[in-house]
Image 1 (cartoon, rainbow, N blue to C red):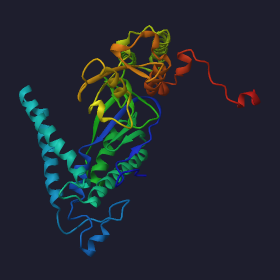
Image 2 (cartoon, one colour):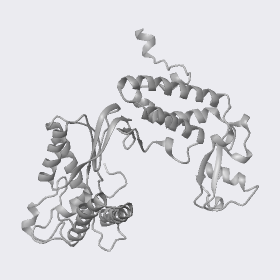
Image 3 (cartoon, rainbow, N blue to C red):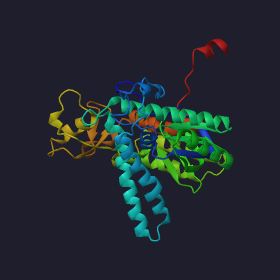
Image 4 (cartoon, helix red, strand yellow):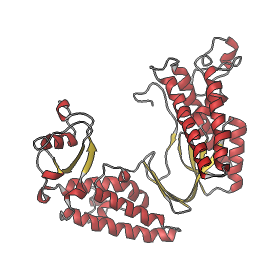
Length: 387
C-alpha cells in the first residue's frame, strides 16, 4: 500500500478513461495546510498525553489529536494559510495596477511554497520537529476529506471522473450542484473547495497523473505526458504538439471524429518517415544532462553515459554537459549525434518510443497504434477455435 514510504500519501482516484466533455476541476485550497489548521495537527498535539483526547480520532489511523491546547504548527501554518488565501490572493484580484498585481502574486506564491513544505517536513527525519504521526495524520485526513467529497458529489448526482490528492474532475455539473458540494464541504470538513478550471473536454488515459484537457478558451493543458518533456526527440515532440493543436480546435463530439482521422494520418505519415530513415539525425536526438562525470559510473551505465564515453574520444565531457545521442542497431546501442550515420539508426526503437509516447493520448481516443502505422493486428489463439 505504501511501497518504500514511511506512511500513506494522498488519494489518487482511478481515472475514467476516455474523452469527456464539459468537465469542471474542483480544487481544495491549500488542502494540507488547511487540515493542519482545522484539525490542530502539530508535533505536540498528535498523540498527546491527555486521556480524554484519545476519543478525538484521526480517520484510518490509530492516532488522536489534542482537544485541550492549540498546537504550535497548527497556529503558525494556519495563520500563514489564512494570510495567503484570505488576504494576498484577494488583493491580487483587486489590484489597481499590473505592478501591484504582480507584487501581491509574488508574495502569495512565496507563502504557497512555505505552506507546501510545512506538511512534508513533519515526515522528514532531518527536521528538528520531525514527528511521523503528525505527517501521517495529515495525509489520512486528506484522504478522508476527498473520499467524503466524492460521496457528496455522487449524492448530488455529479459524476466524478478522476481525483488526485487535492482536486476532483467532475462531469457536466450544474452551477447549483457545484455550489451545494462546495458549501457542504466547507460546513462538514472545514476546508475551502473552489472551481479551479473548466474544460471544454478532457482526455483521460488509464494512467494516474496523466491527462490532457482543453479549456473553453482553447488552451491545452498537458499533465505528465512524455511528449512534452525536453528529453523527447524533436520529431516526436513536434508531432505531439501538432496533435495538441488539432485537439485544441475540437468543439463537439462530431469534431472529435474528424480530429481522430487527422491525427491518424499524421502519425501514419511520421511512421513512414521513421521506417525509411528519412528523419534528419538531429531530429532523432535524445538530449540529457549528465549529473556526474562519465568516469564516475562503474556498474550501471545509462544510455546517455554510453554516448558520453564515445564522445570523450573527441573532447572533454564534464558534469552539467548536455549529451545528444541517437539509438543505433549495433552495440553499444547508442551514439552521439556527431558520430551517427543515417543507415545505422534503429528505426524499430524509435517506433516503440513513439508508440509509448503517443499511446498516452491515442489509447483514450480509441485509436489503435498498430493500425495507424500499418502493422498487422495480433491474432489470438481463441480465433482459431471460435471463428
